[in-house]
Length: 58
Image (cartoon, rainbow, N blue to C red):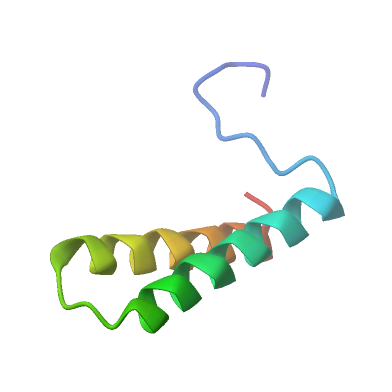
């Protein structure tokens, strides 16, 4: 798996915790802003992706 085309795993538990924390912050920020626009949906999706990647280690 030395090829650059493969996804890299998170390096350790600290990286996983940071990803989950960033995801929670992004989703929380979009929920608190109470704005109805397309960029809020994108921020929420990015937060969800970060949480998912933190949980599965990618």
